[in-house]
Length: 142
Image (cartoon, rainbow, N blue to C red; front, side, top):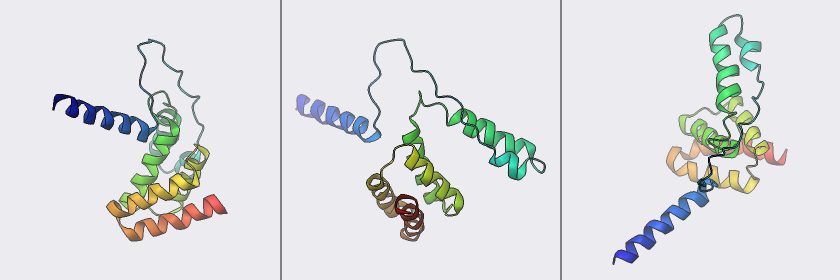
């Protein structure tokens, strides 16, 4: 009985690690260097004179710092989380398309995107997934 519970726990742990694509951390103290900061100017270009602090937070903090912490979470997983969050919250505009394009750039395959959106449909809503699929099809087949 004890061994059965341990096997189930181990299987769940392997599944969780396999699903996220994350590898187990070694005992080594060496950590991978963070990726170079991404330079985004959309906030400054579109809102800089109207809302300079928001533009700074968008371009320099969110895209420049957070997205660059690939030593903490790979860009591919960040993209999956972002696309799923956008669909779930109903953000179905050009910003979703942008993040689907980034997901593709970050290694999310067409097949993975289709699975991500299918999974999300059951939790976030069928119409939202339909809208996201339109952008995904355009990005991956366009």
